[in-house]
Amino acid sequence: MQTITIDGGHLTFEEIVAVARQGACVELALSAKLTIKRSRDWVEDIIRRGEPVYGINTGFGVFSDIRISTDDSAQLSRNLILSHAVGTGEPLADDIVRAAILVRANTLAKGHSGVRLEVIETLLKLLNQQVTTIVPAQGSLGSSGDLAPLSHIGLVFTTDAQDLDSESGYARYENEILTGKAAMARAGIERVVLQAKEGLALSNGATFSAAIAALALYDARTLLRAGEISLALTLEALMGCSAAFDARLHQSRGLKGQKSVAEAVRTLTQGSTLIDRVARVQDAYSLRCAPQVQGIGWDTLAFCENIIGHEINAATDNPLLFDPGIALSGGNFHGEPIGMVMDYLGIAIAELAAISERRTSRLIDANFNSGLPPMLVDKDDDAGLNSGMMMPHYTAAALVLENRTLASPDSVESLPVSAQQEDHNANAMTAARHATQILANTVYVLAVECYIAARAIDLRLKQHPAAALGRGTGAVYNTIRAAIPYQPKDTWWGPDIEKMKALILKRELETEPFS
Image (cartoon, rainbow, N blue to C red; front, side):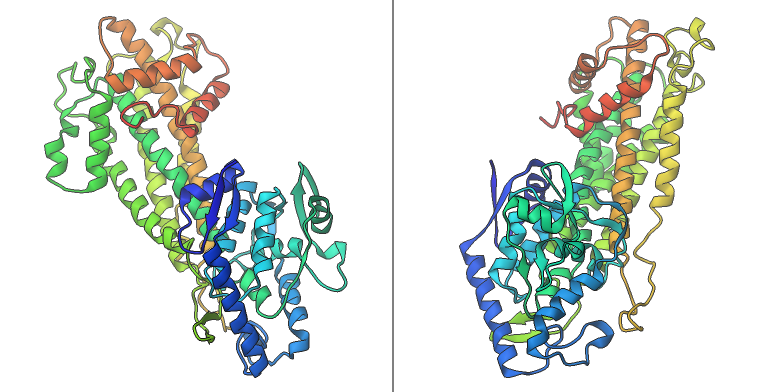
């Protein structure tokens, strides 16, 4: 079993995926343990001095001017968790929850939050012993962080003197949903009684937004690769023009992503005798301009990865503690950077789906597919009795339309809360959730294009038996046909498209130039 070591500063997207989806274990670096202890000592010094510091001995939000006695600090932290765990909607996927727990532990390990070591170690026990809290998907504004979702985690692993089962939330353990108290007991993990500052440190910060973003960025890389493969397959099937992918053309503009897409298509189609087979001067935009449209997706991804890479290694609660025990109240919990880049990512991936659907439309339209049967029925005589690829295109078109709504920016939307104290909010988690849904829709759109392009290639090779596919596209086509045989007559296309979707998500189509 792989073990990931966290220290608050070096967590990667790949490590998040390993923990969230592959069950890797997590441990704290020794350096982090020392830093955590030092920051907790600073909190204890502040308490002893009796000076008012937000979140340590004061109320929260609009109640920040109200002093709280040291004797009530534990109840203050627990009350924060209880009162803030008001999320609603369907539960988030387990991989998102596990990613969020990991990111939060890494944030606290940075040593500016003032929690005790046992708090972070308990979070890691949740991961290592597969206790996954049930967290509703809706209810976060993404400023003051993801307060409600993080508090739902806190319900499960923290407690108070009453230790009520009814106030312990819910968790999944050994494929069973239990109360948090029961799940922790069954897993043999002791629940934590929070002390001063710890309730705020656990709930303050856009951690769920960052976790969703990290997983989305990892998946976006897979989809952008798949978009290059689907493009190359369609270019083969439509006997497209190679000139639009010439390196000199893309060098003249200089955009890195655009050059990368064109290079991938050149490599995939190298050796093809279908490309440039007909006397067309140029293709439609969905083929000719694909490097420009899909390339900016890569450039957007790089920008997003930079922002989120910092965010998953950031101290994001408030106040933060610095040597020699200075508490600074600020706004690192504000999720604007995450919300904005998730809007960018959603737009980029929505456009990837949009141009893919346009290529699919050309493949099945006998007016534009260079002599292939209408709807790609097996032969012209089958048209009418068989619908061919008509309906898979409908589904792709529906998902593209949904993406257009989902890609409307969320980060520009804000409502004030907490009696105007928190008067500008990021809407970051909504942006991240919408980007994730766009990704899920786009996987299917790309699967439809790959499926239909492979069928079009079958029909094209019937017309030109001596023709050869490119080195890369040939390998991709063989991978597809090994998993999904050609079906000449109408059948239930859905299961085959789901198989294609699985090939994309497992990266099994990435033969050339990506292997």
